[in-house]
Image 1 (spheres, one colour):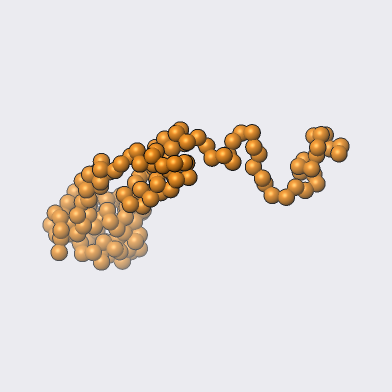
Image 2 (cartoon, helix red, strand yellow; image 1 turned 30 degrees about the vertical axis):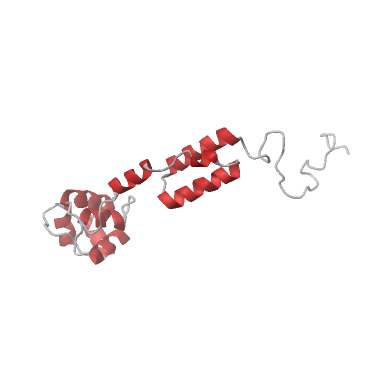
Length: 167
C-alpha cells in the first residue's frame, strides 16, 4: 500500500546514484535484484513502485548516501515529511538555550532540542555559537590555564623549573 504517489523520475535518479561507478549488472548481482527490473526502474518505464523488500535489497548495496528511506519516499511507500520538518523547525524556540543560567545548561538544552526536533548540524552549531558568545568559554578552557596531560616524566620538560633542564 502506497501512502504517497510513486515518483518515477526521483526513484530513477536515486537508483542511478545508488549504482555509483558499478555497472548495472554488478549492482543487480550484489543487491540480488533482477538487472532487467533495475534497468526498467532506472529508465522510469515501470508504473508501479518496487515493493519494500526489493527496496531494502537495493538500499543495502547503495552508494553515494542513498538510503532506504530515500528510496521508500520516492516509491511512495513513505510520506514526504519535508514540509512537516520545515514547519517543526519554524516552530522551535531558538532563544531557549540563551535563557538558561549558564553554558552547561544551555548546551544541555541544545542537546535536548536536537533529540526532540532532529536538528541538522548547522542549526546545532549556530545555537552553540550563540551560547558561547553569551556565556563565554567554560572556566577550564581559558588561554591562561594549561590542560593537564597526565603525569609528568623526565625528559618531557614538565619537570623543569627554569626551562633549561637545570633543576
